[in-house]
Length: 102
Image (cartoon, rainbow, N blue to C red; front, side, top):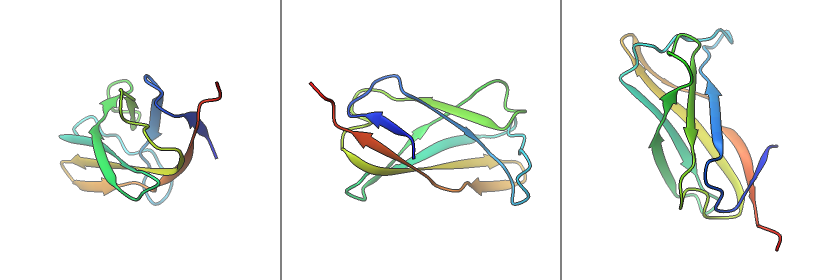
């Protein structure tokens, strides 16, 4: 499981949207690109993601800002995309936020 540090700013989350056959879904026509984060205390928030390139590669990214990674423990991230043919919720991915060692 990947790990990041508590209160990191600028950590990049890069997610590739794939269908049930593991084929990349082109998302260049998407009207909504979100990443939902579930904190260790089970509260959920979302952020608006951006294309990594032009969307034809199915990749979205988000760079953390102050206040995003504010709890240590196991987190989950889940992509949500709306395109002309419907909406897609991707598989959730777990990662760990570790405390800073001073």
